[in-house]
Amino acid sequence: MKSIIEQMYDGDLFPTGTYEHSSMEYKRAMDKLVAAESELLVSYPQIKELFDRYQSAQIELISINNRQEFVNGFRIGARIALEIIGSM
Image (spheres, rainbow, N blue to C red):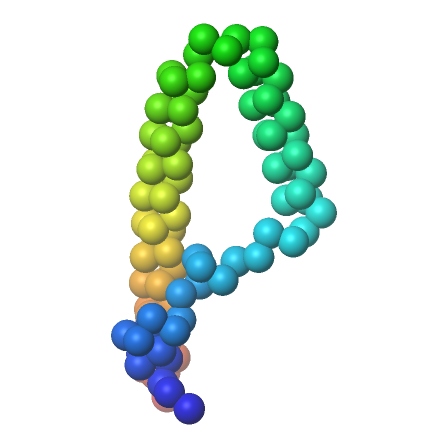
């Protein structure tokens, strides 16, 4: 079995790519989002281009935030491991 470092290097360990959106809570939230988006674009079709730009900017911001949260979590995990090793 590969070490966790080897798995990360090889791209086999990628937590953000393995998240499953199967919870009912997620499904309900997504249904609300899709319904609101549909209602908005039906009511105001002239804003579609602006809305698409807004969505793209929001996706980029969320992606940057998710990456930073992953990095921070990884650093905390490394500090925990170092503290455990240091107390042995």
